[in-house]
Image 1 (cartoon, one colour):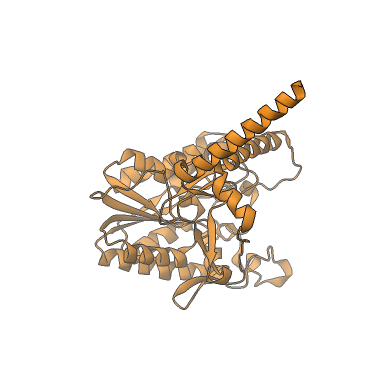
Image 2 (cartoon, one colour):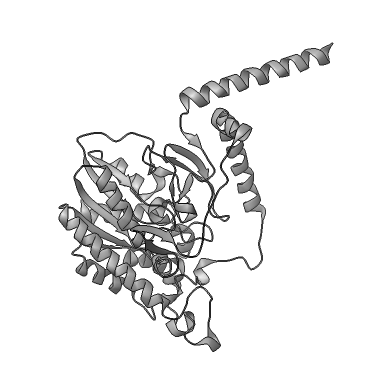
Length: 370
């Protein structure tokens, strides 16, 4: 008898929970849910963020999951709607500007938005984009939003050189992935119904999964694990002989990532796109700011073969930017003064920034651009 009563109670509880979850999913939590909030177009040759989506995102195994909300245009945001009549600020970039590894309030864009309530902040960044795509998304934004932009910030990351050389090209006036196609199988039938109607269950499962991943990460001691501070092939052109790195000297080539001349080609494409970005900014009477930051291995090995700071200054001059916001001096100062600089500035075994690193960018932007 007791077993029967328990079974009935369990069934009633599950029924009430599932009905409540359906109500929650349809009328309260109206965003779609996904593990990454990416959508792929142009037969898998382009990707962007899904509109009105939530994800407990985890792109890199060494760092924690982080919450991502996208607005009705598919841009990462705080969850609060933009207000008419406010001045507008646009941010362009890749994963650093997007804020990989950090919830919105811990990103430098989120910190600035909290400080300057009289502006609408539009973060157009998406991981692994580069200047070829930055120009495209800005033009698309301007076409769809007939509004004045007071300031445009673009973070030029070290990955942009490789992404320009190896990843992105323009086909029929649209950015296209060069050597890959990306497809995710669309949900159909019961899988689609479950995803649309049991969002509470998804959110609960996602949180539990993130909790146990964190425990596993803390318990694991990986011998010989990758540490970006010891070197990163995509940013190694700063401190490595280009002929060796890019394969011009086949006998001692250090990586298969680059082809001969690839670094120079990527740098040239960045310059062309940033000059065009400067031209766009000038036409719409907007101030353009370029942001540059070092990676862990940049701080460790220096700039022996290519000076990124000089390159940034040159880009600013040629694009008529209002100011180069250079974080190299500030980050180098942290390295000189603190033995734990790596953990202070960068997420675990990664190039992306901690709350402290993001705050330093926000403070420098406040100092030089507001």
